[in-house]
Image (tube, rainbow over all chains, first blue to last red; front, side, top):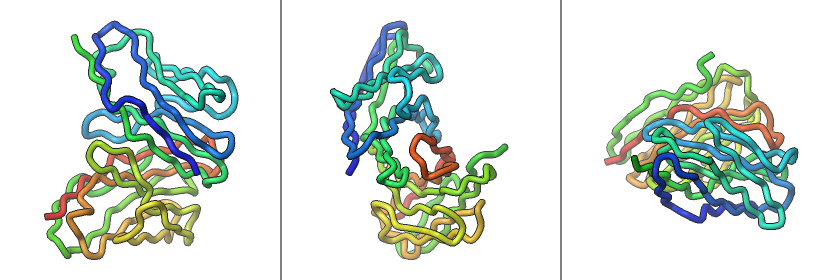
Length: 114
Length: 114
């Protein structure tokens, strides 16, 4: 069985400072991992994905994530937060044994202060 | 290219009423999914389909039914609405059941049962 734990339900940063959103996963096999972003009253947008290629994955809007198998982590980072980054972020895992069913973490709400 | 289209965007139902949430995709994706998102939570899988004529239960199927008569359409039926079904519903599609393919999500249907 696969599961995802997002370690912080809320993260608050000042504009221009780094962002770190933490995610740990559990999967029986080599997983695929995703980060999705959801702006208020909007659908989900794919930020980036890891699919067993390079462990450092670059996504849209300056975000990146590093897959660390030994730590079962897939933390999302951005060097400098922008006001438009304020949103809900979901870490998601899937593996072939689960037929590409996505398992979502509980989400992290990112707040960006001026 | 519209992607995944959901209708309606908002709906208020009375307890015991029935309704169908519509979902259409124009990307020729073979996999389609219905998720629900409760406040402050990640998404949970209700039903999914791997192709026309094939559907299967997800994590939280009780109180819902689906059908998949065409590749494009995947409606979700609520037969006897209950307050516990108040949620935001997302339809999604993907090209393949293989891991690594991200989903395309619709913009959601916000349902309130009173």
